[in-house]
Every structure is written in structure tokens, then in C-alpha cells.
Length: 243
Image (cartoon, rainbow, N blue to C red; front, side, top):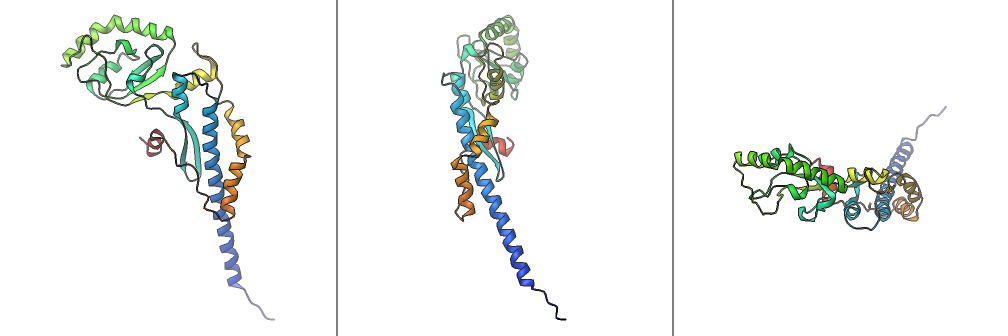
């Protein structure tokens, strides 16, 4: 009896299967990237075009590619301090410098009551949307304590300008997660604006879209199929780098 083994044939099959698997993974990654990008655009379109915090919300929604096989839609927003809405916002100093550490003990702050420290305040600030009643309450609370706060600042050799405007030299970040929860469920006087509860259904629709299918097919058929996810915001990039 003659026995033989076709080793080269076995190797060819293994190589073909490995190549097919690699191509399939690339195709799935390309399709997932397009899906995440389109979902971010869809979520932005669902946010009311009403200015103020709604604009901050919309501008913050960004596509993010965490890895070649992981994608997401996240909300980040760096703000300019002079663009914060004074009558609709509260601020939390995050510490860092001596003056910021002192002020953080009296969080949250209203814009109107932040002392105008000569040279500005170092350290980061977290900004959250607030109702008119919340802003009024904390204005009254801070005015009752501002004398003691200024005394403590003087002991640390900080000069406060009586009629000056407050200045923050650190990073000012909007708490988008806090805003989303208030709007999603209509908390604390905010109009109920459900968006993320609808997001899974929207993602399912987009998963069957022509753009997602085309991204998958392009790779399977040998095209470049580069994912679209190259538009991370600076904040999204910071999240991926662990900052």
C-alpha cells in the first residue's frame, strides 16, 4: 500500500484561512469605525439647537477610536472661562495651587462671587449647568462667607482686586455627563430631552446602513478600507492617553 501526505496543500489551506480571518477582522473594524462616526453625528443632530448649554453639549459629542477594534461616542468639552453662562452655571475648583485648594473648600462657586485674585487662579475648574434657583442659593451662601475667604487669601499673600474680573489660568471643562443626566431625565427643572436612551436603537439602524456595509465590502474586496475614525477631539485624545 502506498501512503503519502500532501504537506504543501495543508500549508496552503492554513495560509488561506489565516488570510481570510485577517481580512474579515479588518473589514469588521472598518465597518465599526464608520458606525461609531455616524452614530456621533446622529446624536448631535438630536440635540436641540437652542444655544447655551445645548451648544456646549452638541460640540462635545465626538467619535472616538479607542483601539482598532473598539469604538465609542463620548462627550468632552473644554470651555473658555469668559464664555461660561454666569446665570446658568456652577463651578468646582479642582485644587492644585494654594489659592485653588482654598477656593475648592467652598465649592461650588458662581461666576459673580469668584474673587478677582491678582494674576488669576491656577488650577482646573469643572463647570456644571444649574437652575436659576441653584445659582441664587449659592450666591447667597458665598456672599455670607466671602469676608472669611478673603481673609484667608490675604494670609496666603494673595491680593484681591475689589472691582476686578476673576480669571482662571487652568483648564475649564464642562461636565457633559452631569448635563446629559439632567436633560435625559428632566431633573432639577431641566426639560426632559431623552437622547441616549434612544441611541441603541439608532445604532442598530445605522449598523444596517449602506455606508457601514460599503466600508465592510471595500475591505473584503481588497480595497484600502481605512476607518474614518481619525477625527478625535483633543479631549478624546487625552482620554485615550490617560490624561
